[in-house]
Image (tube, rainbow, N blue to C red; front, side, top):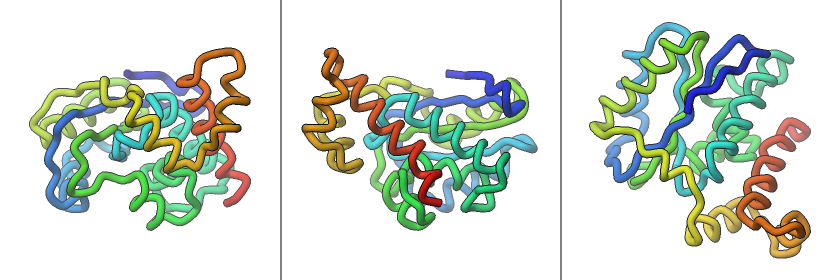
Amino acid sequence: MLKPLDEYGRFVEISGFRNVAIGDAKVFMESVCKDLPDGVEVQLFDADLVATWEHLYYAALNALMAFQNKRNASKTLAVEMALYASARRQIKRAIEFIGVKSGSGNIAVVVLGSDEASVEAGLRVVAQRLGVEPDDGVLGLSEAKTVRIRGAFDVSDAELQAVSACGDAEAALVDLVVERVALLSTRL
C-alpha cells in the first residue's frame, strides 16, 4: 500500500511478507540497504506484533515529525520508525521487541522515499532478497495475533472495553496501539 505523505514530501509503502526465512537479520538488512535507491529508507518488523498497516503508518508519520522538529532519538528514519512502532524509548529494546529476528516468519516492511518510483524500487529490492511476493494479509488481525499484541502493548480488558464501547474491538485495539505510538513523543 503506497501512500503520499504530502506534508513531508515523501511516500510510504507498507507491505507484508508471509513465511519468510531470514537467517541473520543484520546481514539481511545490510544486503538490502546496499541496493536501495538513494534517499530510500527501509525498516522491517515482526508482523505478528503489527496492529494493521495503520500502526506502521503512524509510526512513520511520528518518525518524520520527530526529524522535522529535531526531536529524533536516533540518527536514521528507519530506526526512528522502530522506536515509534514499538512504543519504546531505547533503540535496543525497540529492535528486540518489534524488529525482525532470525525466527520471524511473517514480516512487515516500511519503505520511505521522496518519490513513488524509488519507494516501489525499494520494495522490489526487499522482495527479491526475500524471494517471495508481498502478502499484505500478514498485516491484518487474527484472534491469536490480537492476544499477542494486547499482551505486548499491555492493553487491558478495561481499556479495550472503554474504547470499543461502540462495537468494533479490532478497531479499538488498533486505536490503542496507535495511541501508544503517538504517546512515545511525550517520553523522548
